[in-house]
Image (cartoon, rainbow over all chains, first blue to last red; front, side):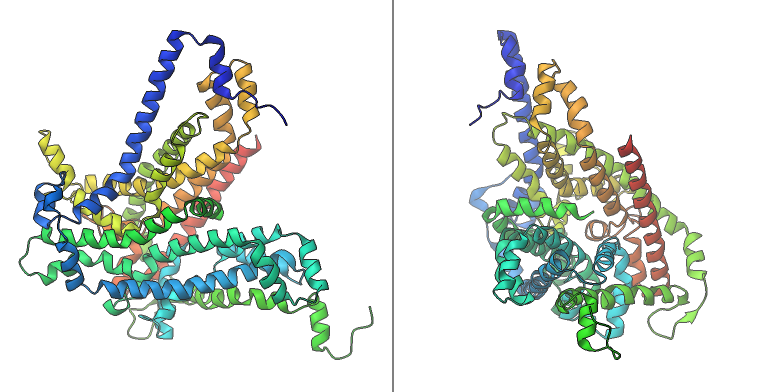
Length: 304
Length: 302
């Protein structure tokens, strides 16, 4: 075993560990932690405020936005919300899109990645370049062409419009190809000797080996679909087909229209309650699967 | 190899393709979906961009009129100007900030690093629409928490979302809150990829923390910085959801970005002009990413 090398600050501070340097170091690290904590507050405060305010009545949110009185906490916003707004439809539609679109992504992207990583076939390299080239298409620019296409097919306000575009996407294929390229060829050769078909190789050898990457892909796909807003808001124009995020974006107007003559602040409590509900699944998953999340997001950041 | 059979058979085709049809079957779903929801819609929209079409009657061919209209339309240029303004508010600030915070988080003896990294990343994961609602309430002119605090401190209320001058910074702050945690994560990964020995050697040579940052950390992070600058720039040009949920492009078009400008064409079903605007935007994205990549590559070489 090698002995541990002294780290940077050990070597840097050891020769002159006098009282003055120590004091300076302490002050410095105090400032460092104070800054990092303030920053954490900046990121967390809006979320905490959202959750706490969802237990306050609208007028209270308006008149005392910064204080929270536990004894006055109420579930009224949630009760009214569930009575006034068909939020369960939003959750249900999002769930349907998640299941089907997610399944398509998780099934076909590793499969295509396997083909590109481990097979030699005519046109492979140019086909793969084509896959990469489609990543350059700016998504927002595709909105109007896609909308036109859905109009032609008569698919506006349908699940297939929400599910199919982008279900087998170039980035996921690219990433799966990278991961599958690392699978040792000997494993696949052994499988071939045992008489595995190409599909058998994929199912019995490749997928089990790349399971951590699959988990990361699943998380990334979940986030993408669950938080997706731009395409669903364009593809759908009836409440019946709205996903959760689309419903949430229009909630304030919906509630205000319903309560004729009510102050705008009355709707706030319910909107914040709905926002809290919509945020919970992501937070719960993040807390449960932290390591996978960070791994997945970092790998996902290699998109460019 | 034997001579090719006189008539092409399935077996010969398979051999010519490399021995198996399987890989073609495996990659077929992507290409099917791409043709149906990528290539074909694009060509169709390209054709429509040369017509006057409002979704009801048959499209009427009008040549380049849509493009000429857009290029001489003040609103089109204003949306590009808004995007440029937002770019200035977002990308340089966010990139520098992320490098700074990541270099603090990478300090060797930092405690609670796990907590800080997690706390900073959560904002990146939560749904934009949910947090936009919070923003609307916090930054409300009459009842918002921010103006409440300002007035408690004896200052006057600000129309965060109701005045053109403040709407852009408020929108930029939302984008900053939402995505700077992701930027920090990228920069932190880049710093942690720098070999420790470099710092040890520098410390032996007597370089202090600041010198190490400028001489080692920053130069070796150049790729990560360039990568982030490019994706953040493309995101700003295409920004659509943020103005949609926060300001609907207002007040007075002040937050109508280049991407969000497409929304009004969809709203009023003026899809011929909308398609033309989409293609102008595509040209812009291709040009900007081409220029940025070239600049960054040129700097990489020296």
